[in-house]
Image 1 (cartoon, rainbow, N blue to C red):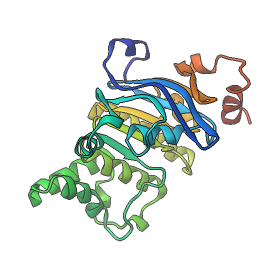
Image 2 (image 1 turned 120 degrees about the vertical axis):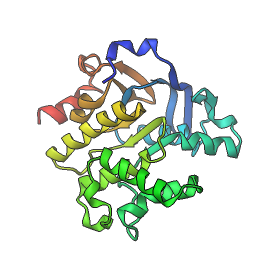
Image 3 (image 1 turned 90 degrees about the vertical axis):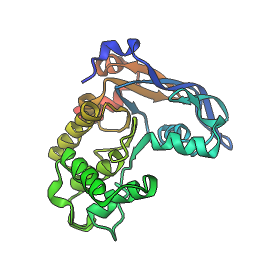
Length: 256
């Protein structure tokens, strides 16, 4: 795993500067600044409705900020043409909270779909190789002919991650990867996120409310408070505080 103390020597793959976003009179982001470094897992924490998902949508070009700058792989997102934005999105993998699998397709077909859509010239043998390789990476080779309805919640999460990885993205965005899972499966997903970082050399943003997940996978933690990232550092650095906006997160996860 990337050593937490060495991020300052690495290249930045995402740079967010003074980003502001409002919806009418509701000010969500109020000058957010954040960097994602090459090869790191960055965990984003914050209360519901504080703008975590909004930020992810801005990074991917699904929303446009009111002001400020968002650069992904060195390119200003809101200045890209439609074709350029598509290329950037192919470099970003999304792991959705609900896994976003097609219930009418087998696991194999779910994994083939993004390849066929984006790399149309692959042969049947090449498709098989890509599908089998990514299933092996998430430890679910035996599910290749199963339907999503036959999978457990944890297996669905893994297949969702596999479908994202099959395009070999440089950046991974995880939305609540352990939500709704039992403690043992949460550990398995945390280990998988770390394995993906090592095996695919990804740079990742992980949105979670699960501090066990945050501590297990995060090279750095970024706490979104009042529309800004006001606490950024290691897990210990973020939570060594008496700030009453921060301590309830720790208390809820580890004391109650």
